Image (tube, rainbow, N blue to C red; front, side):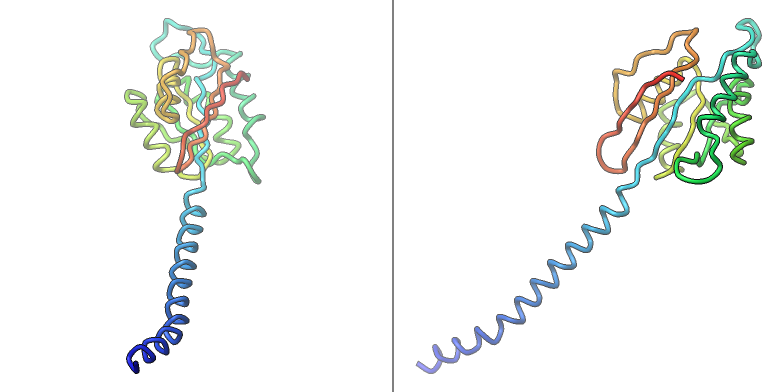
Length: 189
């Protein structure tokens, strides 16, 4: 009889210790989850455009036409805020003169040196952009054939329509979260 009585007295004594341990584990788990959500909630916003209108299609590396220069100036009006929310953090462009000229007015306004990246592997470029600019806002200036491929690589989608040869005003805004699926918005500017 004494052993049964002794077990009854130990049980109530250990209950507060077990409840405290379970509560501490629960609080620790919730804190870890909250920290994980906080640090993974950032999304990288990538704006992907084609270079502006070029002068001649016969030259190997043509400059921008007057219409192209006007489109490059429009980019400054759209994304040229030097402070505050929505400021671009980086600009990626190919080595082609028309791409560098499209980026130049905006880069000068923002005080950003454009990153010249090879355009032969759009998938690698997309991974590089997300890796180097997590949670930031980036402008990518590509070509008629690379823009849809870059958008497809960033978004994981295979239904990105090709851009036509005379189409210079298409803009893709791709929001790439660290967790979940990317969102794609296609518009004209």
